[in-house]
Amino acid sequence: MTAPEHDAPPATPFAGLTPDVILDAVEGLDYRCDGRLLALNSYENRVYQVGIEDGPPVIAKFYRAGRWPAAAILEEHAFARELAEFEIPVVAPLAANGATLHEYLDFRFALYPRRPGRAPEIDRPETLNWLGRFIARIHAVGEIRPFEHRPALGIERLGVEPSRWLLAHDFIPPDLRAAYESVIDDALARVRDGFGRAGDLAQLRLHGDCHLGNILWSEAGPCFVDLDDCMNGPAIQDLWLLLSGGRAEMEGQLAEVVDGYRDFMEFDPAGLHLVEALRTLRIIHYAAWLARRWDDPAFPLAFPWFNTQRYWQDHILALREQLAAMDEPPLAIAP
Image (cartoon, rainbow, N blue to C red; front, side, top):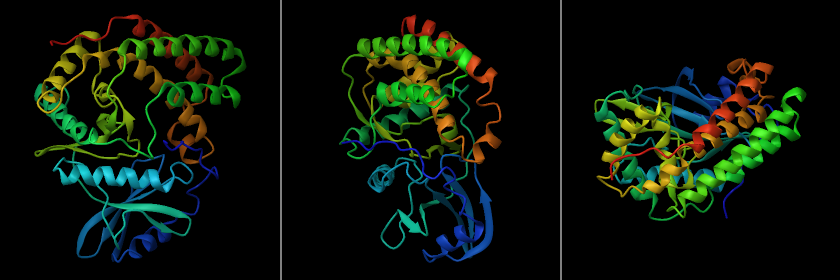
């Protein structure tokens, strides 16, 4: 059975995560901190670079309380370490005292090595080809067995439940509620149609959130980070987020990605029926994610444009645009 995704009680789960607490947690694992602490860009969890005496810094990731049960986090860690054992470039958690998941006071956390890098240059065909090869290698390991405690990609979890939550908690402005309900009903109907056309796709362990912000690039090539959203699902979920621009641009990008992907895995073109359906689910889920976390003080500071009249107008417009996109034929590539 997959683990549910929970709201975080309390609304400010990181209120007690002071610099002293962070350093004490790391030093409790037999590291000697030098006092340097740098907050990194993360909102769902809290992530810090911690300076270490006589050694490279480590990355400390403190998990949001109530989101994942320990078994789901440990399964994420095990997957990352399994990929690393196959010499796939992922940032896997460090083991300390024989464990990768640790507790200090009310916080669960993990340590990672620091990996420098920059964003991939996806306007270079060789970069896309390279990414396709390494994602295929992730999937080759991912198909060995399914996750037992991680969630599965699905319309209910990513579309139906989030949209119902937004309506139940009165985030949609009253004058836009009817328009939102109408477009959500139409959007989810088309999403279901897309899944129906795709058919029974193979399910495997995925990175789950393989956007460019989770890929570090260096002279050695890509390094994949942040498997916090790893899940069971179809392969296309780890590929479509690499695509951007108009239809012709996306088809060109996809051709390069799939060309590299086929070096290690077969590519099922039936998954292309899901590209716009998955984009629609991501739009719905993202709005609900922001709303669920709105009581966390970090969110209004980081996303001041959220939950305004203009935001919800634009959100409804984006969903209407997705209705048209889902009516288009799927992206095409050479067989």
